[in-house]
Amino acid sequence: MARIAYFNGKIGNYEDMTIPFSDRSVFYGDAIYDAVLVLDRKPFALDMHLDRLYKSCAMTEIAFDMPRETLKAEISRLLAETEMGSTMLYLQVTRGAAPRKHEYPADAKPNLLMFTSPVSIPPKDKRATLFSVDDLRFQYCNIKTTNLLPNVFAAQKATQAGATEALFHRGERVTEAAHSSILMIKDGTVVMPPLDELILPGITRAIIHQCCDEAGIPVDVRIFTVDEIMSADEIILCSTTKNVLFVYEIDGKPVGGKDAALREKIQALFSEKIYADTGVRV
Image (cartoon, rainbow, N blue to C red):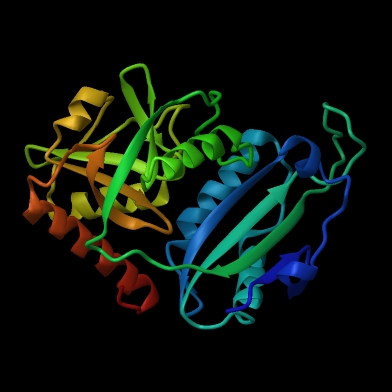
């Protein structure tokens, strides 16, 4: 499946597209982004992703003034060029092109780039593993910016250790993973970390919360520790491309696997959300 790209209205092959050398994303990572799961050209939870995109622009003072319906039309135009199947839609809004200077010019015009790429959705019975890493990121983790070097380092360490993902912790507090949300199940309750400056408001996490509320599954939003997650009944690893996976090992030690009924119910409820939005079964 070919990757199709978009830059400020122009659509072409991913390998052939270019952006201005002076774009501030090149020098400073001065940009925000989002990623959406697309099934047979139908984006899943698109409005939730766009809510986060526009909020990230506002929090970074990127003056992205394209109306939402116009952006949706541009997304549809790009997806029309994409093949059927499982696809990731990537969107990035940069502050724009300007002379290299730390302070950004008030008249900078944002640039919009997007691309689609094939993605493999992991099977529901995939058992994930985690490798714990000190969370050394800055305190803007709630903004989905392209400043991801600490996440890159952590993901690389996890991969080298043979793990699915890196588990971030600040001292004893569990925050999230390198590019996923971390939740846990304890005594029939789904426990989620609070959405503060150390946590990205994950879309998959939000949908799981919706599923739990609608099904009467208790949810507790609070800080939890490394010791707590090691003794949890189940550990949930979730993201746009992973959907909902469960963890069976952290740092080589067995974890989870104690509440199969609730685990399977949450996965089934999430799958129904995907089907309702896209008409595709996963």
